[in-house]
Image 1 (cartoon, rainbow, N blue to C red):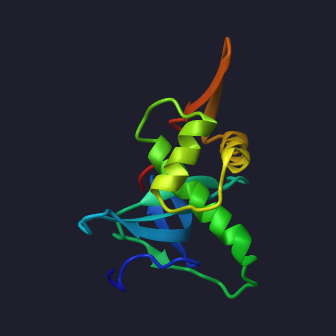
Image 2 (cartoon, rainbow, N blue to C red; image 1 turned 120 degrees about the vertical axis):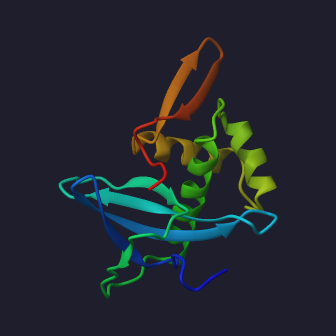
Image 3 (tube, rainbow, N blue to C red; image 1 turned 60 degrees about the horizontal axis):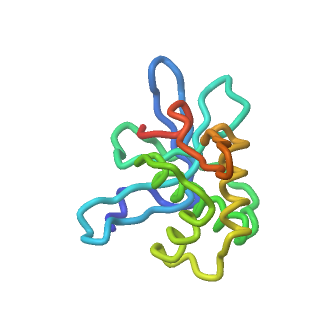
Length: 152
């Protein structure tokens, strides 16, 4: 991975539609074939009070604005990065249930996580506004909220 790309734990800023957005990078990952690199994390725009899940594969225009601060506990940082990665997958489409998420965990080497973690991750993303919960007779599933997260 190139060192001129985003780095986990750093905050970047850039102008976007007459506003400044900040992007707190939690995870940088590559496609299995190594041809595509993407950063996952959280973004906030001037005037907003809530951070939204976000991903970007475009380093253009971003400036590192990281301020010295106490680091979050490692477990919290790992949970946040995993949820950002999961949200990126959900944005590809489909109906996501807790069983779908547990299979996704296995496919992406998030070991030791089961239905309880899947339900919790879906609830956290729903509560942040990134997912929409759908309740139909005998089934609950989630889809991406198109206004939360997305490419920068």
